Length: 346
Figure 1 (tube, rainbow, N blue to C red):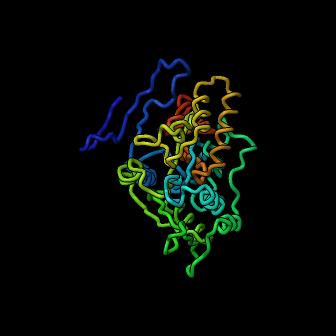
Figure 2: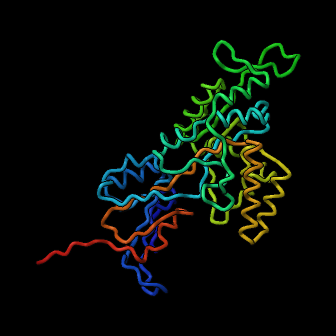
Figure 3: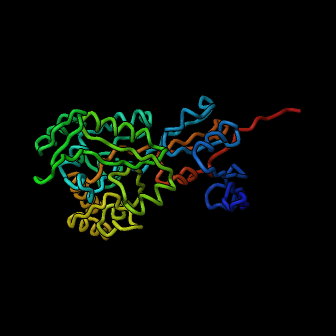
């Protein structure tokens, strides 16, 4: 193993040599170089310059920037990730369950999936990724129904002002009506989804203030402080699907990942039980009940589960992939990979 680092000590490449004593068949490829880039855009550029034979994209967003796809194998691989808009249940407005329900009905998830990812993924119906343990036909999520969203709001006393935004006096003593408005924090990489969400909600009569930030800003100023109305972000699972870290009441405070600041005793109990159960059927039932409670309380708008996109030049043969739990899984059968070489007669 040989590591190469930059001036700041960051690893930029790892050179691996084949293990000829591997318990299965010995690898055909004798040397493998893993290259690391600061951004997906840099990785795409390296592939286009033919500095790399393969590139992994977290989603399909940058796929169209790749050159040489006609001479490459393109794998679109389901993942255990869910992207969503997590609503701060401590917020003055989003603390109301009926407002969170109206927000859920306002969003066209299919449009977001198609425009952001060109369909390379699935609509997320709940907090657990499609096809994972705890999903079932009974988990249907929220339909796209903007008229229903308006009906919910108007039933609860909201009416539109001259700009088409809902307003309401929250207390009888209020002199002025409150706008139905909240802030949405999003990393730059998925700002298109945030823009679509803003537009969907504006059509209904809800105003959204977008805050498009860097990943560092997101981490330091929002994930730590939970200072937002809503946040747009993805959550990743392993084969052992454990929503505890995202949804148990004990994980609200930093460094916890309960982004909706959500706490429900019944949900907490289900998550605690699910962690202890070894029988898959029983565990699946607990997780299914958990999903139904979350959808009922609507602390988030679950949007999509993106596919990983793995592109490899056709010179690399015998790659067999059907899904990725974690990105490194793409190398699980690398001992069978081979590189096509051209015989030159002298």
